[in-house]
Image 1 (cartoon, rainbow, N blue to C red):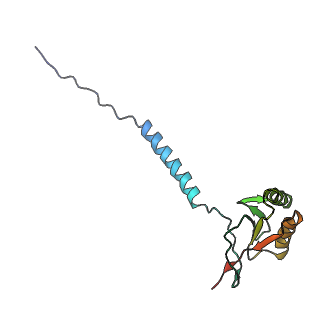
Image 2 (image 1 turned 30 degrees about the vertical axis):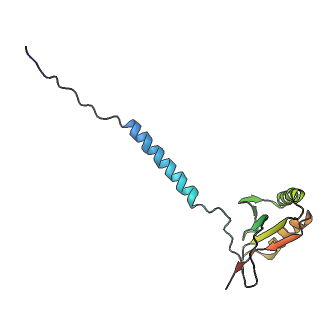
Image 3 (image 1 turned 120 degrees about the vertical axis):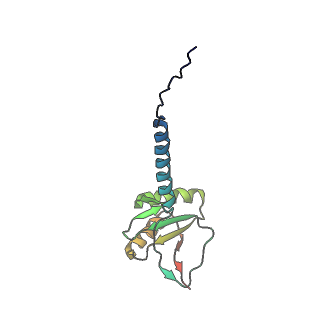
Length: 134
């Protein structure tokens, strides 16, 4: 009997599934770190005040950026949209307290415009956000 060993061809491992997994991991971490490094609030530099006090029951916040744009919950809104949002919240809670967070570099007329839009629909409990200085 003649027993001969047959040589098996060694094939390279299939790299396609490994590349797919690595690509998926790369995309996942890129998206995850982009979301985790994005701030959740608006980037508004508040003016400093000694007499400010914190409000625990903030119910509605309007941010006014330095370019005069209004933001509610991180979404840019126009004046009529701001009125509609405040009016909708006032219909469910007539004792609504609205905080206006204006950037310290914003023109005064933009702050007054935001206050006018809020007061036009019946929002009379207003506060201006400040950064407490020591």
